[in-house]
Length: 339
Image (cartoon, rainbow, N blue to C red; front, top):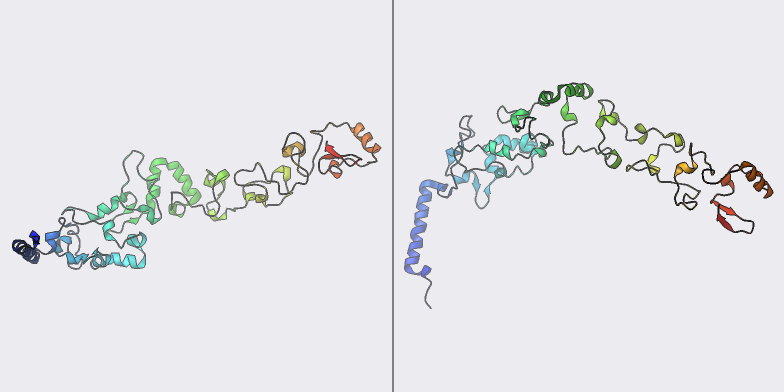
């Protein structure tokens, strides 16, 4: 059987020459032989980290950032960037808040050229919502130009500390009168309420269905938002038609979809009485639920009713429900019929 050309004498000699050449070049230029591009000189204008002014200082020495078979690891990066290690350990600062900060390459890609700014590149894809404050409502200024980090943050160094006064300063340019009143009502501590705008987690009381779209001040009358009660009666007055009758357990009859229709927790008289199907409460209870009348549907002649009942031996007939609790006429032969 004829051997494959690769295993022939010329093939083996060629492979050996290639391997020796690669080893020699690696010994001379280091890992730069496999580099996908130049490293950034960012940082040359700042104090050195571990004696390095920028990544350019160790270009070609891949082992400074890359672990064998693993690639870039947080441990290697943090050997120089110790402040990042401190933030991750203490869960403070940007790197202590964000997710997946163990994978530095997610935000800070290298080998993009000498002038590449890894901080600026990270800001373009910065997951701001992970800080607890979404920028969904802060994409553009009223004149159309986009927001910059420095509009809200003091970017001295790399701290990017939030300037609390920035909210008031910027919003005054849009509507000064509103801001004056809002600060007077609720203080200038904007983040006490507006820490998350997509959407606000009103976990104490679900603002859905009939309560969706309510303005804050419809329930919160003072700047102390914790003072508002979740009890229905704190906002809804007891309707006159059942004032003082059913207590404050509104949920026994009403739902957040709307006050009407109400569920009847207990009603002895059939509300589908007659030929019209279920009848409205006001048909019988015209003034209050404590009183009722049958005469809105049934013809009433006081003299005739008196005569009819007395002939039947019934002398107290002002309370129809006393005898007609099921809404039916009971004949002397035991039969029943609709009134």
